Image (cartoon, rainbow over all chains, first blue to last red):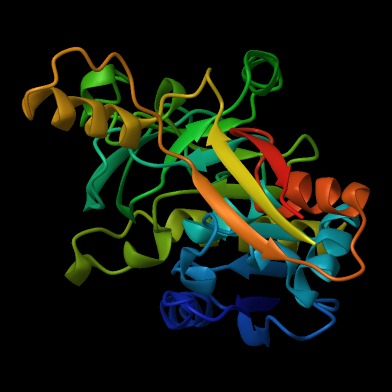
Length: 233
Length: 76
């Protein structure tokens, strides 16, 4: 399966994504933000980092880069799109996902391992995990506080589009374990068609026991399984 | 044309920067500070741009309507 890793000036998790994708059996390729096309891939990854230095707003300038027009087109065709950290911010800025990510409640940049509760696995990104299972994946962000209006939140819930929430080790979703003030502990959401997934935690940093967790692999394995299933059908 | 675009967090959105500034001002001997909100000002010099275009770019790029409001001041 071919995977595009979109590189913006300031992307810094692109190589981690490449390593993990390769290990999981993908054929990853880098696509530069000035390229006009992100077509021809089974998966498009928007990696973490500080695209365009986070100037104006996180993801605001990346959204207007030439390649993003093509990413939006590919997403509309059903190509899987995974946005990690800044990638999630770019997906929100570009309108592929609703809402926005604002400054953390306590104004601090937070870099730590967190626990995520899998809320829904009926999608290509988490099918290898069971609902209610707890993933150990790190976060590293200053603007991970997800906000949206009440109507959007109601819709996300009604359509089961909140895929992961911050929780404690036992899977309890409580205000005490909310690291950044995000609405209802939301860590990641998907679009209505379930082919675009954005999350603040970094699954690519949790794919080796040496790094403290292997749980991030579940996401990449789920994606590969979904793509294989789609090709076989 | 010279214009200022003022971008402010929406009233309904918690502005943690504003809260931090308000608290610091209170600790600095101004207990009467009720609130502070932190936004940004973008100063522009423009040629051949209409006000309608300016509004469009202020809405689509300079601000994020999900969390921010903008106002435009045309200066000359």
